[in-house]
Length: 434
Image (cartoon, rainbow, N blue to C red; front, top):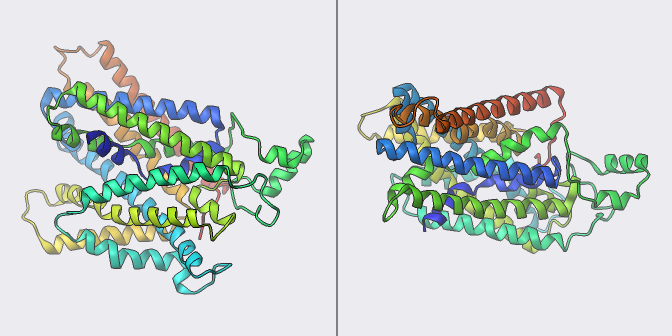
């Protein structure tokens, strides 16, 4: 059960962006980077568990407090808040992107019209006000376990559908379908292959094994975003029947391994279906092939239901963190409870409405809060919490921990720099934009 819970904590909307990441790295480089992030995530959990075992603390923010006092607690809470806001933003962006396509299919419309119920911006506000906000205003989420299980089941269904469609979607696409808006357009592909003297169809349907371009900078942030589960590790550790570091590390390794396989398969089959035509939100790409595909419609409805039910679950710890930062030791207030939830949903809706695509959300959150939660904080908490009489500052484990933190800082700096350069140069794609 713990493996299931942690797998669900890892699994999220990041899986929808991995095929795009593979298109911008190539299969071999993607596999190398995915393996590296998975192994580093496992090592990071080892550092957290060791720090937690020494001081007997089972909360990420409290480790920050033990290591650096109130500033450490506030910074950790801020990183968790940003990560969860990023997750909620990506979920709402999926609603904005996919719900109009579902309505289009149900109404049997060949093309999207300008009516309000086909506008993703109006629909995401409507869903937020009528479904998400009422659930977010509950004091307790009784459906938490059911929603978590359903969410994970939907992503498994998504993987099965992506695998199946690989063998159903023709390559190259028929001319009337080959107008996919992407980071690498059909016209660009034709020009490139003609210059290289290759047949167009062969080149369009040939996988790349190693690629570097302006969009490669988003790959590590997308992967980091997809593997963040660290704030949930310690609470799950506490709930174990016979808790031990070895047992929790085994559960973590198994959960990461399961997600690693699912992520790679989803990315591989998504990429091998559309190659360079894949969009930053994989599901959206299928509408270019057949807007009325029943299987993809079922996947869309399942994913939309899952993300809609998950937003209130993710909002709860964000609200708790805000209350701890700003209203610590104060009694429960319904007014404050409602105000924080409404304010958060309003800000996230504005972000989703004005964000050009989901890639920006994955990129920025994956390049800021994710490296902090996976790399930097576990390493510096470990360095500060483990006593010097047990492990001197120059001992191998502590030197490795510091190196780990430095790697996190470098990845964050490099990723942010490349993303900002990409924005300034105006070469960021708008796949899946509405």
